[in-house]
Amino acid sequence: MALGVVKVGLSFLESGSVILEMLREYVDYTPIVLLGYYFGEVNAYERFFAKVKKIRLLNNLFAEMIVFAFVFLARGAVKDIVLFKADILYTPVIVYILWRFIARCCGLCYEIMSLLGKYSLEIWFLHAIFFIGSESVQKIAYWPKYSVLILTWTLCILLPVAAMFQKAKALLNNLELGFSKKYIY
Image 1 (cartoon, rainbow, N blue to C red):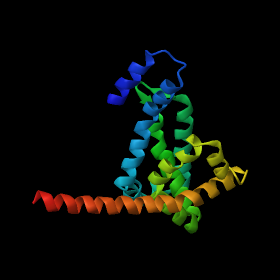
Image 2 (image 1 turned 90 degrees about the horizontal axis):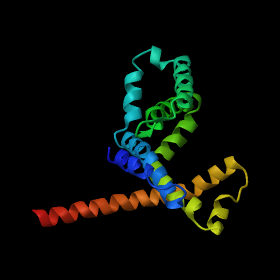
Image 3 (image 1 turned 45 degrees about the vertical axis):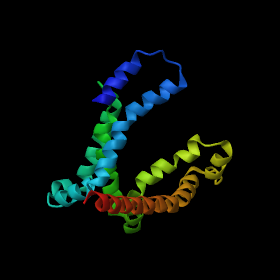
Image 4 (image 1 turned 90 degrees about the vertical axis):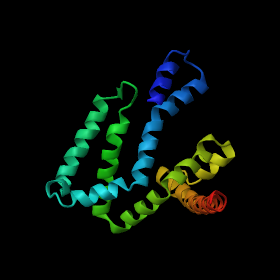
């Protein structure tokens, strides 16, 4: 709700400022990022998948493709809702159906996607190094020249760093818990 108020306030300011445009985009996409983070924290897809397995109609590739097509077409029809991007409504559905499709097609792909999902937040934060960094840093990411290879190369660079960040975060959380228990009790 607060982001909606900020968005309305930003709409009254003069356009053309790079900083204002960046702030508007941030406000537009923050709910989507927060929803994705929440889904990851509560294992929403895994829980939903466990329930859907029991319903035969929903566990059907054809039904999933129809839902995917409907959501994809609806995305073109509904650009924005009053105070936020409509992406927040259909992104979880598209991600879930693509995840199911990959899981169905290839066990190794499923394992790779699960690994990437485990570190996705850290990878997402770290990839900013390549698009807001200097040109010399961007050359590292774009060294392979072909988009699929760039993606693979960048993930190979970021995945070990993301794993180290996650380990450091867990270590700091444990230290904080130990510190707070020591001085609170």
